[in-house]
Image (cartoon, rainbow over all chains, first blue to last red; front, side, top):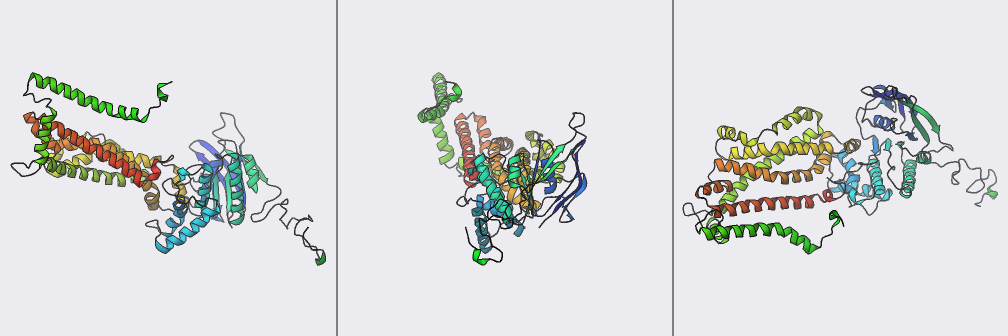
Length: 276
Length: 272
C-alpha cells in the first residue's frame, strides 16, 4: 500500500510559477481525481508525481522515501495519447514491460519464460476486454481499445501508483462509461493508488474517492506569471468509497447495510435468517 | 466538379502513367529520324537499332582485350562501391542518429557538428580524397559516405526527436534502461524511416559514384560513360544511362517493398 506525500511543492519554469506551495497527503489505495481549468498545473502536478519533472522546491515522498528523479516501474502511467507503442502488437505491448524488466540486454524473453509471460499477458488482455485482438497493431484498434491496452500494459508492471493523464478524455460517452467500469474494477481488485487528471467533473466524481481542484488565486494579467496554482478544493467523495468495497448505496455491501433486503444476518435469531 | 475531386478509372490512370514515357520515346524517335535523314552518320541521336547493336556489344559480347562482358563487370564494380558506401552510411546513420536523438550528451556534442558537416559540398572534397586516400576504391566509397551519411544522420536523429516524449516516459515506467529504450522502443520505430531515407539518398549516392568514377577508375558504369564520351558514342551512353536509372528505380521500389513487408505497422494510420 502506498501513500504519497507532497510537502510544500513549488514548480517554476523560468519566471513562471506554475504550482505554488502545494501540500497533499494521499492515503494508500485512494483514487484521487485532479480537476481544474486548463493551464492550472494539473498535468504538471502529475508529471512531478511521475518523476518526468522535478519540483523546484519542496519534496515528494512515496511511502516516506523521496521520489526518484526519473520515472520508474513503481509508477505506471496512461496518457490520453501516445501511451502504446505503434510498432508492437497488442500482445507485444503488454509483454514489453516484464520483458524489459527481466532481460536487461535483449529486452526479450525466449522459450519457457516467453510462453509463461505470454500466458499472463493474454490473461491481462482478456481482463481489460481485448481478448481476440492480441495480434493487432494499435493503429488497428479504436481509441477506447487503445486506452484499454495502455492500462493493461501499465498494470503488467504491478505499479504501486497508477497515474492517469486525461486517459478517457478523447473517448465517446458510451465507450467512456464502459471503460469507467473497467477502471473501477481494476482499482478495486489491484493494490494500487490512482491519481487521475481530468477536466470532466462527472468523471472525477464517478471514479474518485477524493476530488482535488487546483486553482489560480490571482488571475490578473500582470500577476498570472508570478502566482501559481494552489489546491482550491479538496473534496472527499461521499458516500465514501473504499477500494475493494462498495458504497452505502451498494445493496451488496454488508458493512453499511441497514436494509432488510439482501443477505442480512439477524443477530441471535438464526430462525429469522433468510434471503428476501 | 473541381479538378481536385476528379475520380479516374483504372485504365485512365494506367494510360496517364504511361503517357509521359511514351511521349519521351516518341520525341526521341522523331528527333533521331529527322537527324539521321539529314546525315546518316549522325552520332548524337542514334537509332534504336544501333543502340541495340551497342547493347549487344557491351552486354553479350566478350571484350576483345580482356574477355569480360563489359556491362556486367561495370555494373558489378559500381554496385560494390555503391553498396559499400550506402551500407557504411546506413550504419553510421543508425548509430549516430539514434544517439543524437536520445542522449543529451551526444546531441550537444554531435548535433551542431553534423549539421555543419552536412553543408560541406562533397564534390569539392573529391580532389582531397583522391590525394589522401589514393585513386582506389577507398576514395570513391568515402565520397559516397561523406555525401550521404550526414544527411541521413540528421534525418534519423530528427525522426527520433519527433517520437512523442510520452512514449519514452512510458517506456521508463516499464522499467526500460537507456539501452533498452534505444533497442526496443526507438530503433524499431525509426527503421522504416531509415529505409525511406536510404531510398531518398539513392539519387545522390549514384551522383557521387559516377562523379568519382568519371575522374579516376578502370571500371564502373560512370567510368564507361565518360570513356566512350570521347568517341561521341551516344549509342552506348543512352543504354548505360537507362540501365543506371533502372537499377536505381529497382532499388527504390525494392526498399519500399522491404519496408512494407518488414514493418507492416508503418503503413497504418498513426505509424511513421
